[in-house]
Length: 249
Image 1 (spheres, rainbow, N blue to C red):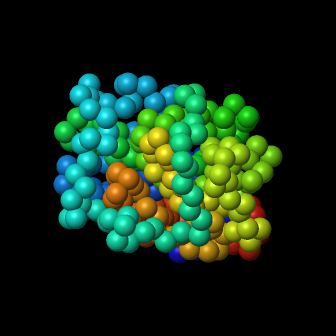
Image 2 (spheres, one colour):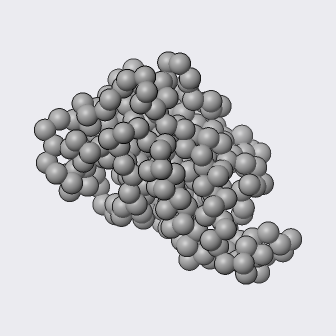
């Protein structure tokens, strides 16, 4: 399905769509996409990645220790690398400790393993908001949590080079978005040597299948286009017409 121009409607309309899309991604993950032992929930994470967020129960081991990396558990990175336009790996830890999201946990310790974040207008609404979003992403990656971030809003004054540059700062792998595809789907493999897998997207284009890593060896391919389409069907017809008409309301 073609990506719509969500800047044409107020933030509340996208908020409704955002809620539906988060729900659809959670459902598809729980209906067989995640390997046994993993589960996904829509959770509100407003602050940092503190102990109340990281674990529903006090863990005895870091997130990576509970992940089964057998061949029948997700897709092996070595066998089928994610298909993206840009990929970079750091050689050392580059991060300092510093709305609802899909949160993937493992049942052994109920720790957060991975998260899916859909960028909303509020995340870019002020300098403080975008810095808070970036800081939360950096904290997660530093803690070894894997992220998938989808930003369907074009770069603005607070992220002139896209959301990835704000998160990744001026580190190696800060890719320049092409002018004809200024929006971002980006997956981060968390840990001491983070990796980034980025695919630029454009209005009217189709969303790619993106990796959601469960460890540094495996990932599950998230069908962004199919879940977007399902969430779009839940948008009221009036606002679907506004978003697909030739003129803004």
